[in-house]
Amino acid sequence: MIFDHLKPQIKHIISEESKSVNDKLLAICALLEENIPHYNWVGFYFRNGDREELKLGPYVGAPTDHTIIPFGKGICGQVAVSNQNFVVPDVSAQDNYIACSITVKAEIVIPIFVNGENIGQIDIDSNITDPFTIEDERFLEFVCIQVASILT
Ligand code: SME
Image (cartoon, helix red, strand yellow):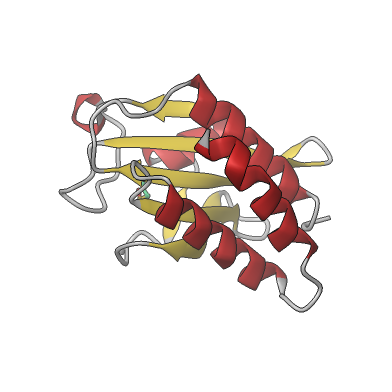
């Protein structure tokens, strides 16, 4: 199973002393995008200071204009306020959605909690319709817990 194979590699990246936090986040994005065929854009958004908005962090994939996303807007902005995983099998069926690329068919966003506070999220776009399962959610929750451990 690809996810079980990737978990030790995530832990290794997290533990690398020579890498900055941003380098680790970028390495995680690259690892996921390169190894999981249905992950076509992988990035992190974090709360922008005290503002009610998200700011784009490290990512791998096509450049996006959406470097700032207000809370409540799009899939990412909704997760910033709901504190819940958001799995979108078909983005065309969503009213509150911010399109980054016409190739994107599906999206998954998993929040990152530090001391119980939702401080950001991992966001993944797929060019395939309905590709995400509960296994993706469990794996990405693992990734978010690992990432939280270097953000405290
Ligand atoms: N589609 C997201 C915006 C971010 S891009 O996917 C990189 C949304 O609706 O929040």
